[in-house]
Image 1: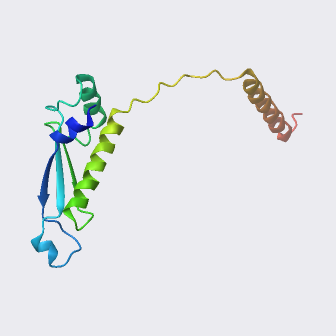
Image 2 (image 1 turned 60 degrees about the vertical axis):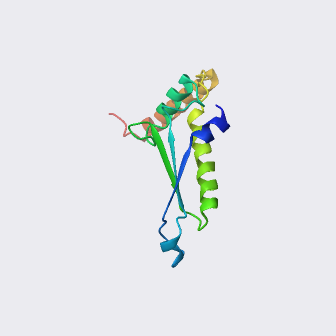
Length: 133
């Protein structure tokens, strides 16, 4: 993964934002929309692309385009920084491969304890029964 190459492939678009800002909202395009085309990216190897496609399938469009937007701040520059940081976090999480779990063996002492507890519970329940005559 080459971060500089990836960031050069990202496209930003400023759009008018909704929310707080008064009359400023009607004049200034402070919302930032980030689009990233995964299929034509040169910053990832083919294996990384497949991994990202698999891990980010809920976030990608049918054309393998990731779209993120941010309108948290009134400043376009801050929104651009926030959405870029969010994009890099999503990519890092998408490339993460979890460690394979090694199944552990159940200790014999645990098995013995479980069987002993079952037997003691069985005896307790048998003592509660009415005697047979």
